[in-house]
Length: 447
Image (cartoon, rainbow, N blue to C red; front, side, top):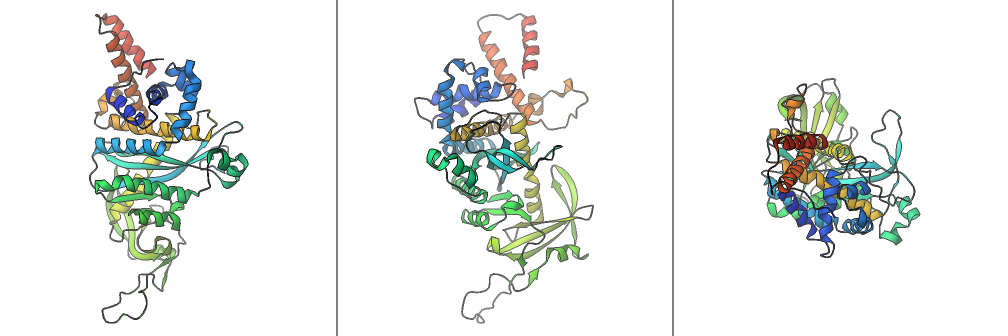
């Protein structure tokens, strides 16, 4: 078995994760995640084992991956604590919820089914075969790099039809839950672990999640929700307050009597305001209208923000905090793109969806190990300078001010691991300058 060659801080984080596993097999996590970091080509579990030289005991590691899948909630809590220790959050904590599919191939892939394809591509395929993951991420603001998503936990959405056909209720104890229910469970999990920080918890989600089950769970968890509104959303005005001494029998009205049409509000020329905001790391001027309304899925009062684009189109957003500012709402909406970037990075850089595992719990474990590597790499790079992570002198055509990509950070970590291992191996004697120069060139080619 190869000796893991990770940095000291990364090794400490992974051992902290492994401490929650069975003591008899916890030591397997470090070499397995080392293989995931250095795997090349198609990132299957087999390529992980080859990269870490674990092929001789491949059966034991496949069983180990399945065992990890049963404990992802406990392990994700450790990842979250590590993130809090590194970032030391100030102000509000912004969480993001969304779902993404991962294509799969071959028969008897447990949990896989036919799902809508959000990115049809040139072929225009409306559906795909694979898994759908409802993912929770913590969106943080780096002082130099802007919004960064730290994925923490994901739930595998399986249709009732696929559960019945694959006998997952009998084999894996899987029961059907909608995406909204899964998202609510993720919020409850996060609220229970972040409550001790004493920070205001916000969650931003796509308009598909702006429905009663999700909003009810968010309210129960004490979270403020920001999401998009349909143009035909059933909004009502705010009821007039009842003065003291004039209250009649029964509960005061929660919803007004007059319906609000977003299309009519957006079509009116008066009432538009302008403000300069920092969105997506750039100062932009936005035209908007904002007003209070009542919304039954949110069980009461909300703040609505209408934003008019340069081409004349408009979008509607809402926030369950009535006194929230327009800047707070639109910044949360813009920062949700960090989760979309996470999906791109884990698929393109780490090969999410390429692991050829068929067992339900193995699939759960593989996805979470990939997501956690993304988070751990971002934490490792949090306090490092741009020059430590990427040298743009080798690419004079590149923009020197561009923030390091996740691939740059991953490669920087790999280079440091290899360099430290080389230094340890060369500690017994003097290495010629020519060999050291050749080693640096080799490391640049590998990572």
